[in-house]
Amino acid sequence: MSCGTAQCISINHNFASSPTLPQLYTALEQAQFRVEDSIADVKEMIQKRLGTQGIEWEKEWCEEVQGLLERDAGWGWRGFWEMVRDNMRVSASGRRGMTADETVSACGGGGKTE
Image 1 (cartoon, rainbow, N blue to C red):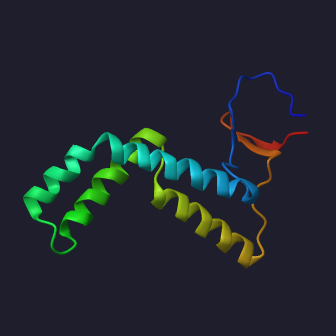
Image 2: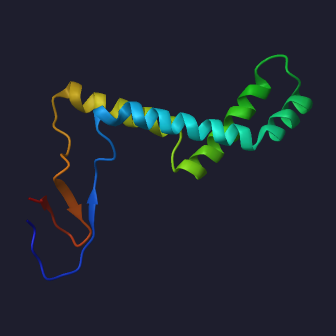
C-alpha cells in the first residue's frame, strides 16, 4: 500500500481489459444507435442537401454521429479502435503494459499499490 502525507490523485491507466472488450463494443454500439435515433432529422436534412447518390452525405452523417457520440459517451469508434490497436502493439512488442495495480499519482510519484 502507498502511504504518504500529501494529498494526491491516483490515476489508473487501465480503462479496459480484453475480457471486457465485447461489453465495451456493445455499449458503444448502443450509444451510437441512440445518437442516430436522436438526430434522425439531421440525417434527412443532409440527404436533402447533398442527395443520396454517392457517399458525400454518408461521410457528413458519420462525422455528425461520431462527434455527438464522443460528446455523449466520452469516446467514439476511433478512440475504441485506437485503444485496441495500441494495446495490440504493446503485446506484440513484448512490452508489458501497466497492470490494474499500478498507478501514477498526481503528487509526483508513481508506484505499485498493494
